[in-house]
Image (cartoon, rainbow, N blue to C red; front, side):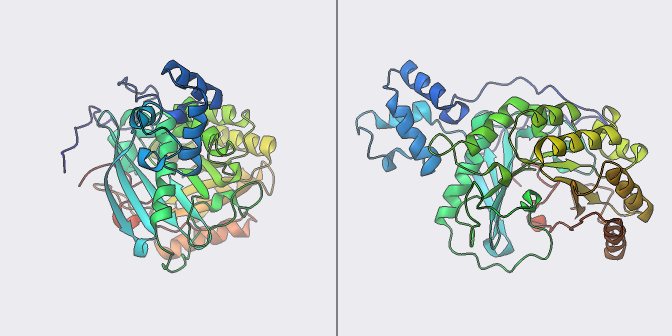
Length: 406
């Protein structure tokens, strides 16, 4: 295996936030970066008839292929040049690691400039969920997250984000039936809190096509706003303009970038919002989630509530359970009080047992303490489901993605 280039980013100082991504060479322009009209124009710029862009859109978004050999409707002469001009290779797989009897697949990808990212594909009984990255690294610097500790290398393009989903569809097409046992906790993708089938693909038995996408991989997607929204639009655009997915099957996760959440509220795309809160009080959240030094707990919750009011989509609150740090019963009561102050029925809480990361001083809450925390939330009338820890043994669970080749 070829050694990967060492990222130029240095580790940030504790609490340091990085909003501006380092400038690096842009990835090649790809069909998925553009809407259909833009693709037609790109084809014409390359000296090709516009209808070739529509043909390639069908191959990529409907058949999930960028292999010229599978495009027999294109003229054989010049076919490879045509495909490389509109569908340049963006993600090169370095390796894929499996867990959960093959139901969880974590892939390390090398980008055109040597930067690396990871995505995690999870097959469940009735859905297939991919956890995708939106940045190489992350600038939010949460101290319990391996991605945040590594710093921000660069933003990803719209097409680089979309290509993770298309690649996952190819993997699923090649995979056999799912034989892994059912998970005990909440599945990743449950944030959508509605069965797929309304306006989108039906639930997937064994997962032969991606039904749910969660922006919970590397990066704060709302800090790479334009590319992330472009990717969502490619996912929900009807095939063959896009992947034809239901917006209700897409979850946008944020540590509480209020300006980004408010922009998302205005987009009119009914994705599910997941707010990574991790503490209900400013004193502790300042330490656990450095963005809290800019946007306080109540500001973050208010922006999430505004999203609910505008879209009608129930918000998910993500809460990493950290032993003796944020798992006290009084914090469960305070969290419930703050959420209920905005009303009832608008929010769901996903406590997540903290996943181990190298060198971390923190670990997961004790089971009994976690259970008491959950019971206090439920006693206050807030729907609460503990998240399963799919992929934790291959460093593929929440907070563990580090994009290393080791």
